[in-house]
Length: 374
Image (tube, rainbow, N blue to C red; front, side, top):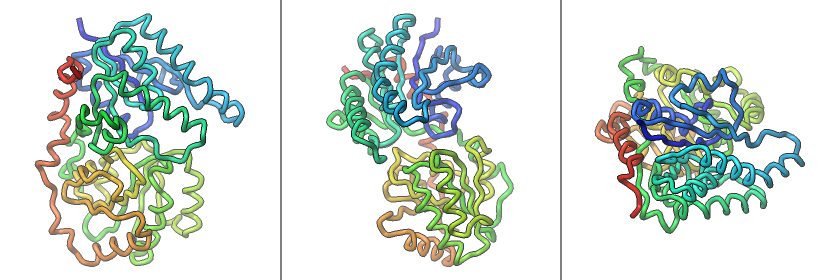
């Protein structure tokens, strides 16, 4: 009889963010060994659920489902009670050998209930530093309460980078360890695709339209590059709450003919095969797996120095956000004009550390209790 593992998602399954990719990879590779259930914090139709056959059960606990401001405040106040009620019901009706949490703002309530029910392996998996986006007073109190539950309820603490572990686990970061984001390198193999050619100047950014990803800065940087190289093109792959603002800025900067917006379910490896450069000015990242994917596709990346340097496979320049968009533009223009790209190569050994085939056994060990704190 297979062991049962409960996955606590970061919001949903259907978006194509890095956390969703991580969950998808782990569960699909280990579905023959474990029975997986998953909790999501959104609604899903039965049709949507059928697309995720690696899960035996998908439990929905919708959050952030109202638009009215007053109702949203009430929902935020009642949210922990709704989540706790759902957690109690879940553990009352099921027995699990492990719980694997990808959400630091709602999952701790499930971890608390899992500890009460003597679930032997209780994992918090941090993918980002602690919440850094601007929030109001009520949310700050809620976030602080959730963060206070993490260390007492977990006995396996993992993260995608040392920065993410230190931010999430604080004084107990020494008990945590890094598990690299696993990537199917067979998909991100430039030899499978027709090269775009060195005469093209195509840029890409992959990421949700949120404060974290810093699209306003990105577009200002690209405007400077476009001024120097009017043949430049930029593809944005994503969606999110800032969609309207981003589209308005594209028009304001006169870039509507140079910038294309595509949905997150686009074929990312294929799109990457058609570009030369990535601009990735995030305000913060746990790791930034898309940089690993891009470099694996032989794309030169210009990234924020707020991103962990574990992402550098040899094709990544880290730039200071405080230096401003004009400075970034000049750096990129000078790089292109200097024709130094030929001297930069992928570090194959570093790249292999992210290969899913080299990482998946680590998750088996985790689920079997090898890494539980004593």
